[in-house]
Amino acid sequence: MAERQAALAEVGKQDTRLYAIYRQTWDKKREAIKRMPMLRSDRQMVMKEFHAKEKAERDALRKTMNQKREAVRLQYPFNSWSKFLQHQAAQGNETALAILRSKKEKAFPERPIATSLSQTPASTSQNTLASVTKMREIFKSEGIKAELQYIIDAKGTLIFKLPDGTTIRDTGTEVHFTANNEQAKHIASQLVQVKWGNNTQIEGGVVKPKSLLYTPPQKSHDNSLNQ
Image 1: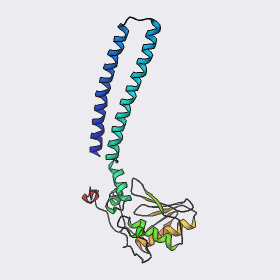
Image 2: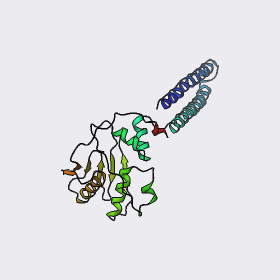
Image 3: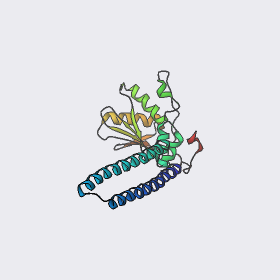
Image 4: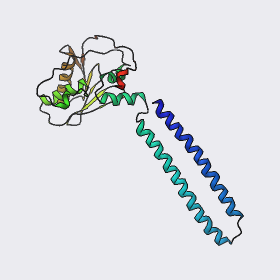
């Protein structure tokens, strides 16, 4: 992220220098025209052409600098550590997901994934988070044909969208579901059972393990994120 900021700052300096040169050049041209003897009608025509050329050069300069800034953003697409972690987690990096969730005071270990022979390559890919793989299996067992849709927020919460538009939110310590929705409750309960076993409880729209099992390690910038 520091590289992105430094690169954008350098483009900003270039922009300032080039605009100063542009301004100085066209101010001199304007003063030169003012000193030229000519009829008022001719001066108006000359100044109209002058302003058009001045604007065209200013627009070209602005376009060039915007292109440079966009090139930097493409080279360094993440403007924060959190965005970088979200991207890494979306690629299946469990360490990135753990760091996003590391501000929490507690966490519960999950059971190993019980894969089946009927899983698709996408669901068994090493580039898929364990919770996503588990939810895909639940979708399949429930006969849900729709493709699983989900996002990861800045706190590491996995937000799964069901076909009817309701959501299930896996925070790492508990699973929230849309209240008064039996399908969401049923799927959330299955997800919690697969993740943590039968020692769970439901309170309102939240399903979670009954006991605190361990405290997660402090946040650290794991080198595996860059692999």
